[in-house]
Length: 205
Image (cartoon, rainbow, N blue to C red; front, side, top):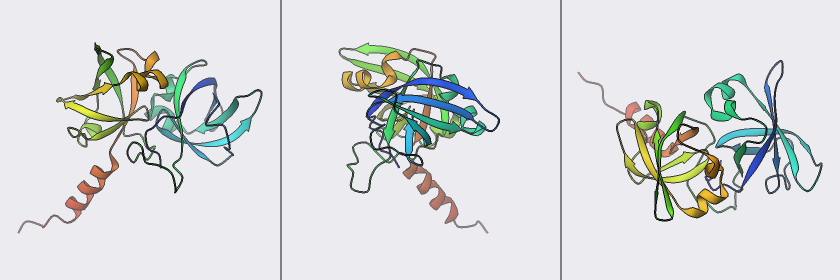
Protein backbone atom coordinates (compact mmCIF):
# COMPACT_ATOMS: atom_id res chain seq x y z
CA UNK A 1 0.00 0.00 0.00
CA UNK A 2 1.18 3.51 -0.87
CA UNK A 3 -0.06 7.07 -0.38
CA UNK A 4 0.74 8.84 -3.64
CA UNK A 5 3.34 11.10 -2.02
CA UNK A 6 6.40 10.70 -4.24
CA UNK A 7 9.62 10.45 -2.23
CA UNK A 8 12.03 11.06 -5.08
CA UNK A 9 12.58 10.73 -8.81
CA UNK A 10 14.78 7.82 -9.78
CA UNK A 11 16.79 7.56 -12.98
CA UNK A 12 16.35 4.52 -15.21
CA UNK A 13 19.75 2.88 -15.59
CA UNK A 14 18.89 -0.03 -17.90
CA UNK A 15 15.92 -1.81 -19.46
CA UNK A 16 16.80 -5.36 -20.50
CA UNK A 17 14.41 -8.00 -21.82
CA UNK A 18 15.17 -11.52 -20.57
CA UNK A 19 13.68 -14.94 -21.20
CA UNK A 20 10.96 -14.63 -18.55
CA UNK A 21 10.73 -10.92 -17.76
CA UNK A 22 11.93 -7.40 -18.48
CA UNK A 23 14.67 -6.30 -16.10
CA UNK A 24 14.32 -2.66 -15.04
CA UNK A 25 17.17 -1.09 -13.08
CA UNK A 26 16.63 2.28 -11.41
CA UNK A 27 19.18 4.51 -9.69
CA UNK A 28 17.76 5.85 -6.41
CA UNK A 29 19.02 7.70 -3.38
CA UNK A 30 16.21 8.01 -0.80
CA UNK A 31 14.27 4.86 -1.69
CA UNK A 32 17.46 2.82 -1.72
CA UNK A 33 18.05 3.39 1.98
CA UNK A 34 17.06 0.38 4.03
CA UNK A 35 15.55 -1.38 1.03
CA UNK A 36 16.17 -5.09 0.58
CA UNK A 37 15.14 -7.80 -1.89
CA UNK A 38 11.43 -8.52 -1.51
CA UNK A 39 10.46 -4.95 -0.64
CA UNK A 40 7.73 -3.18 -2.60
CA UNK A 41 8.37 0.15 -4.30
CA UNK A 42 5.96 2.09 -6.49
CA UNK A 43 7.61 3.04 -9.79
CA UNK A 44 5.43 5.58 -11.63
CA UNK A 45 2.65 4.29 -9.38
CA UNK A 46 3.18 0.64 -10.32
CA UNK A 47 3.92 -1.66 -7.38
CA UNK A 48 7.13 -3.57 -8.14
CA UNK A 49 9.25 -5.93 -6.07
CA UNK A 50 12.95 -5.28 -5.52
CA UNK A 51 14.83 -8.39 -6.64
CA UNK A 52 18.41 -7.13 -6.41
CA UNK A 53 20.36 -4.16 -5.06
CA UNK A 54 23.80 -2.75 -5.74
CA UNK A 55 25.64 0.25 -4.30
CA UNK A 56 28.14 1.60 -6.84
CA UNK A 57 28.13 5.04 -5.19
CA UNK A 58 26.08 7.10 -2.75
CA UNK A 59 23.06 6.09 -4.79
CA UNK A 60 21.75 2.53 -5.01
CA UNK A 61 20.71 0.52 -8.02
CA UNK A 62 17.34 -1.18 -7.58
CA UNK A 63 16.49 -3.99 -9.97
CA UNK A 64 12.93 -5.06 -10.70
CA UNK A 65 11.61 -7.89 -12.87
CA UNK A 66 8.52 -6.90 -14.86
CA UNK A 67 6.13 -9.51 -16.19
CA UNK A 68 4.85 -9.07 -19.74
CA UNK A 69 1.43 -8.11 -18.30
CA UNK A 70 2.95 -5.22 -16.33
CA UNK A 71 5.10 -4.16 -19.26
CA UNK A 72 2.18 -3.97 -21.68
CA UNK A 73 -0.33 -2.34 -19.31
CA UNK A 74 1.81 0.50 -17.93
CA UNK A 75 3.88 3.36 -19.30
CA UNK A 76 7.04 1.64 -18.08
CA UNK A 77 7.27 0.15 -21.57
CA UNK A 78 8.29 3.62 -22.75
CA UNK A 79 11.11 3.91 -20.19
CA UNK A 80 14.62 4.32 -21.53
CA UNK A 81 18.02 4.80 -19.92
CA UNK A 82 18.00 8.28 -18.41
CA UNK A 83 14.22 8.49 -18.00
CA UNK A 84 12.92 9.87 -14.71
CA UNK A 85 10.44 7.76 -12.73
CA UNK A 86 8.50 8.57 -9.57
CA UNK A 87 9.45 6.41 -6.58
CA UNK A 88 7.67 5.73 -3.29
CA UNK A 89 8.37 3.07 -0.69
CA UNK A 90 5.42 1.13 0.74
CA UNK A 91 3.57 2.68 3.66
CA UNK A 92 4.67 1.37 7.09
CA UNK A 93 1.97 0.56 9.65
CA UNK A 94 2.90 3.65 11.69
CA UNK A 95 3.36 5.91 8.66
CA UNK A 96 1.45 9.08 7.79
CA UNK A 97 -1.19 8.91 5.06
CA UNK A 98 -0.34 12.15 3.30
CA UNK A 99 -2.25 11.47 0.08
CA UNK A 100 -4.82 8.68 -0.32
CA UNK A 101 -4.78 4.88 -0.39
CA UNK A 102 -2.88 3.79 -3.50
CA UNK A 103 -2.53 0.06 -4.19
CA UNK A 104 0.04 0.27 -6.96
CA UNK A 105 -2.21 -1.69 -9.33
CA UNK A 106 -2.57 0.37 -12.49
CA UNK A 107 -6.13 0.60 -13.88
CA UNK A 108 -5.16 2.04 -17.24
CA UNK A 109 -2.82 4.29 -19.17
CA UNK A 110 -3.94 7.82 -20.02
CA UNK A 111 -2.40 10.63 -22.03
CA UNK A 112 -1.70 14.26 -21.27
CA UNK A 113 -4.19 15.94 -23.62
CA UNK A 114 -3.36 19.55 -22.75
CA UNK A 115 -1.04 21.47 -20.45
CA UNK A 116 -1.57 25.10 -19.52
CA UNK A 117 -0.13 27.45 -16.95
CA UNK A 118 -2.28 29.46 -14.56
CA UNK A 119 -0.06 31.77 -12.54
CA UNK A 120 2.44 29.52 -10.77
CA UNK A 121 0.27 26.43 -11.16
CA UNK A 122 0.05 23.91 -13.99
CA UNK A 123 -3.32 22.73 -15.32
CA UNK A 124 -3.34 19.30 -16.97
CA UNK A 125 -6.15 17.62 -18.87
CA UNK A 126 -5.72 13.84 -18.84
CA UNK A 127 -7.44 11.64 -21.43
CA UNK A 128 -8.41 8.42 -19.64
CA UNK A 129 -9.95 5.08 -20.69
CA UNK A 130 -13.52 4.16 -19.61
CA UNK A 131 -12.30 1.64 -17.02
CA UNK A 132 -10.70 4.53 -15.15
CA UNK A 133 -13.33 7.21 -15.77
CA UNK A 134 -16.11 5.13 -14.20
CA UNK A 135 -14.46 5.68 -10.80
CA UNK A 136 -13.34 9.30 -11.22
CA UNK A 137 -15.42 11.80 -9.23
CA UNK A 138 -15.23 15.57 -8.87
CA UNK A 139 -12.94 16.53 -5.96
CA UNK A 140 -12.04 12.87 -5.54
CA UNK A 141 -8.55 11.40 -5.59
CA UNK A 142 -6.68 9.83 -8.48
CA UNK A 143 -3.09 8.64 -8.82
CA UNK A 144 -1.27 9.91 -11.92
CA UNK A 145 2.11 8.21 -12.33
CA UNK A 146 1.88 7.46 -8.63
CA UNK A 147 1.13 11.07 -7.61
CA UNK A 148 -1.94 11.59 -5.43
CA UNK A 149 -3.94 14.38 -7.09
CA UNK A 150 -7.38 15.92 -6.68
CA UNK A 151 -9.79 15.85 -9.62
CA UNK A 152 -10.64 19.47 -10.47
CA UNK A 153 -13.03 18.80 -13.36
CA UNK A 154 -14.48 15.87 -15.29
CA UNK A 155 -15.17 15.53 -19.01
CA UNK A 156 -16.64 12.74 -21.10
CA UNK A 157 -13.26 11.19 -21.89
CA UNK A 158 -10.96 12.59 -19.27
CA UNK A 159 -10.40 14.76 -16.23
CA UNK A 160 -8.47 17.84 -15.12
CA UNK A 161 -5.93 18.24 -12.33
CA UNK A 162 -4.05 21.25 -11.00
CA UNK A 163 -0.38 20.88 -10.14
CA UNK A 164 1.30 23.16 -7.61
CA UNK A 165 4.93 24.22 -8.27
CA UNK A 166 6.32 21.93 -5.54
CA UNK A 167 4.70 18.80 -7.02
CA UNK A 168 5.90 19.65 -10.51
CA UNK A 169 9.42 20.28 -9.26
CA UNK A 170 9.91 17.15 -7.12
CA UNK A 171 8.27 14.60 -9.44
CA UNK A 172 8.88 13.39 -12.97
CA UNK A 173 6.07 15.65 -14.19
CA UNK A 174 8.57 18.40 -14.91
CA UNK A 175 9.91 16.41 -17.86
CA UNK A 176 6.51 15.31 -19.18
CA UNK A 177 4.80 16.97 -22.15
CA UNK A 178 1.52 16.88 -24.06
CA UNK A 179 1.00 13.47 -25.65
CA UNK A 180 2.98 11.56 -23.02
CA UNK A 181 1.44 8.48 -21.43
CA UNK A 182 0.75 8.37 -17.68
CA UNK A 183 -0.21 5.51 -15.39
CA UNK A 184 -3.62 5.94 -13.79
CA UNK A 185 -5.12 4.36 -10.69
CA UNK A 186 -8.60 5.31 -9.53
CA UNK A 187 -9.49 5.50 -5.86
CA UNK A 188 -9.88 1.92 -4.60
CA UNK A 189 -12.77 2.93 -2.31
CA UNK A 190 -15.02 3.50 -5.32
CA UNK A 191 -14.31 0.00 -6.59
CA UNK A 192 -15.33 -1.59 -3.30
CA UNK A 193 -18.52 0.49 -3.13
CA UNK A 194 -19.45 -0.57 -6.66
CA UNK A 195 -18.78 -4.23 -5.85
CA UNK A 196 -20.83 -4.05 -2.66
CA UNK A 197 -23.80 -2.34 -4.32
CA UNK A 198 -23.76 -4.72 -7.28
CA UNK A 199 -23.54 -7.80 -5.08
CA UNK A 200 -26.39 -6.66 -2.85
CA UNK A 201 -28.66 -5.35 -5.59
CA UNK A 202 -32.06 -7.08 -5.28
CA UNK A 203 -33.12 -9.24 -8.20
CA UNK A 204 -36.08 -8.12 -10.25
CA UNK A 205 -39.11 -10.40 -10.18
